Image (cartoon, rainbow, N blue to C red; front, side, top):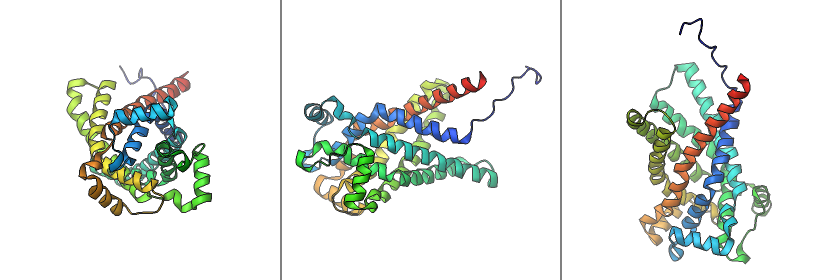
Length: 294
């Protein structure tokens, strides 16, 4: 095709829409995988005396809380995606734009470092929602007289501030940031490597992204789960405690392998969530361009 007959290049999407679509994609994706996240949290909080299999935890939830019990804490999960995912994308784009304008196109290691930094910053922004989410998803496993019975994420946040003080919203922030940096680092590197190895066999398309995401999710789950379990215990504790103390207690009381408790439901969340976010994001982008091209 000659230069004269080439269709005009599309105008780039406004930067703020990348944030909006990223947050919306995360929120839509979490609606699908929230049950797996809830099961994972319950397994992580069970401790040595209440260990159960995935099916055992699922059975308990169905028996005591019904099908809707799997979506306990959904408002907090949505709020977390709205803060963490949007914050992570905003931070990464800002770092990437600054580096490109100053030093040129970043190499893969630089992108990896920027992704870890953006993940940590986004996680700090999303820590209050994370605290509310952990507490709301853990509530159903407690005796009725000990439950907090938060109505929604905003009720949880306001009650935490009034009953325990505003600093409680950032309990476990260090653990949350650490986990986010591990997750972002593992996801970025393993997804890129799996994609590179598989593209010659599968070609470009959803199939490639799906399988690469599942491989990335497997490695990410293994690498991040110990940090995630420590974070969950810290944020759900009634009294403040350090990551090191919680880690030592888990190993002493439950054994090293307890650090990977809830592996299956965690992987059932991370793998599909990555795929779903990508699919939803592509659909939102396509809708935008259909609207602007019409």
